[in-house]
Image (cartoon, rainbow, N blue to C red; front, side, top):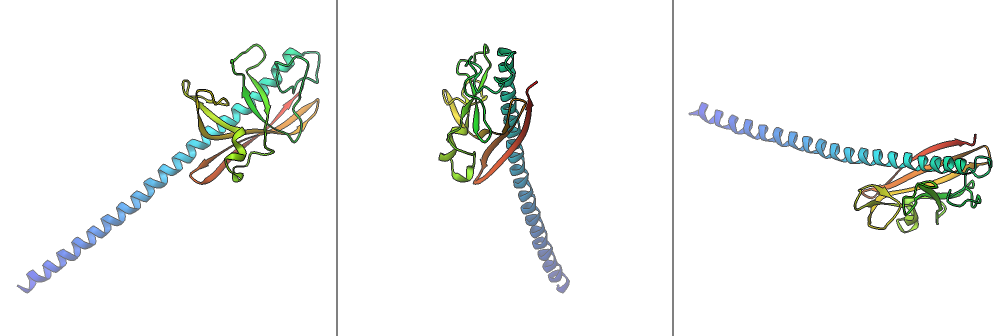
Length: 198
């Protein structure tokens, strides 16, 4: 009888120990799964942000190439903000923030893009959403593309600006910055681009 009682106590101890190990493993696996999901979400946002930064730099290149084709004999028109303005109107200047704006009619005649003036000095999400609304990107309801137009679109989590640090008749250097919130934390990625007037 004594042996039976000892075995009974041993079985209970083993069962409690096994359950404890299983619960611990489940908690560890749950934590790993949660971290994997969060990391995947942040990685996805970084990929989208890098794509938007590349699109912004290509938009500026598109503007400069269009200006060069429209004014092949005038080397001073290459950084005209809007290729649709034939008289070499406003030009990009060092220290200024811009946003690449798609033409409303998607007209390809004089370039798809133009640069618009940013209403705030720098894109900085630490100042809050209201201070950065100029740079907010939208998602088109039909094409599901990121766009600068709020017409038939919903606001995305991404903001994009272009800041020129150097501008002269030979070359220009600009930074494309894309920022967004992941939860309450602000993230950003930047791309520094040089363009040469040849």
